[in-house]
Amino acid sequence: MSQNIENHRTSKTFDLAVIGAGSAGFAAAIGAAELGASVALIGHGTIGGTCVNVGCVPSKTLIRAAETLHLAKSASRFQGIEVRAGLTDWQAVQAQKDELVGSMREAKYRNLLNEYDGISYLEGAATLGPGSISVAGARLAAGKTIVATGARAAIPAIPGLQDVPFLTSTEALELKELPASLIVMGGGYVGLELAQMFARFGVSVTVVCRSRLLPHIEPELSDALEGYLVAEGLSIRKGVTYHRVAEEEGRIVLSIAVDGRLERISGDKLLVAAGRIPNSQDLGLESVGVALGAEGGVLVDDFLRTTNENIYAVGDVTGRDMYVYMAAYGGKWAAENALNGGEHRYDAEAMPAVTFTDPQVATVGLTEARARERNVDVKTSVLPLDAVPRALAARDTRGLIKLVADRATDRLLGAHILAPEAGDSIQTAAIAIKARMRVADLAATIFPYLTTVEGLKLAAQTFDKDVSKLSCCAG
Image (tube, rainbow, N blue to C red):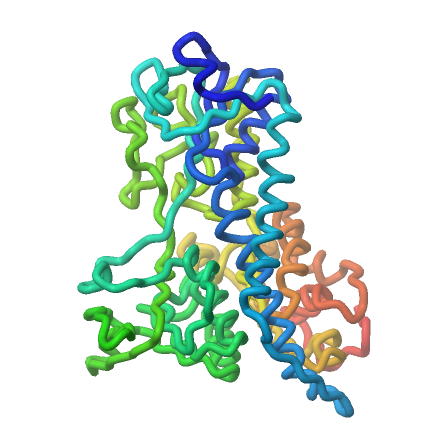
């Protein structure tokens, strides 16, 4: 059951100490308790970590709320239908979001502590030292330790930025009033999700980024998504160099250079969405022989061990695969490896990822470029969504599907979907990649008709035939 650090001082020795009470930390603590271990779960700040409090949960509920407004505006794509909708009370939208966050934090985190007798929850900043861990002025000992302290918003070194009242995603999701205009600095998934969301709530949005949108995905998907966002009214300035940020007469002014030309962009608010950096500082990691990477992530091997054999690290603090489900996945295996000397390998080969723009971007496996970097002779297929019957029936053909395969073995290496329901379709491709399926096997698999996921079958068939010449459901 939950206990306080004051009850332990220096007398308690735990089998496992877990530093961080977010998804990775809870998964590790629960996994260890299920193995019969005594666990010190050390939290600092709001219990539950990023996802439930200031990340996935609040952003996705607001994104869905904004989507209802867009659906009303786009209902006229069906003849004979006219729908009107509008935002009447932003604070009510925020209050409903906060209620959801609070209820999920209690149900999925705080209330779970009483379900596991082996877990003692300790509140305070933790510092590692030789042979012990300091928490809120007290010390405890543990046989093994797992570091799961997450990450925070990265703030780029741009002249003047620290002198203006900018927003991170945390503050943006808590705005009490909507600004008339917003500059979004960053073309990654956080920046694009929130940019489109605020635009659909009526904010004039300008996105600026150094390269292209979502630079790590297939360029075909990136270019298409950019066109859809611009069609909704967002302004996008890519390939920019940041010069300076200033506040002038109550507005934020961002000075940029594009193709050698200087430009000034102004807005009521500035959202900095330039990625995330691991929370690895102030933990005393160096003092116990734990090495960090160039970006501050804790270095781990395939079994999540750090350079100190008694210390493991999982989740965003490692600086890789920054998704809540990968944090939980890693937490479970780290606990078992730490306690039982297990050799459960952390495997992200078939890790799906979803960007919750509309249309959604969902990917798994290798891109064409990454496969070629590995000297794989690849073949690809690209299927526009207007070749998918589901999209035609929904009168929404925004998107495409790209598959990447090994030419020699026909094995599927990567799947990349841009579609309104891409996130619900990508898991089929993830399973196919994990099972080492061939494209021919995917093409021969039975899929339900009038679903987005059927597009995977059609994309697989596209390697060898013109699917426009097939009848409905044709194999």
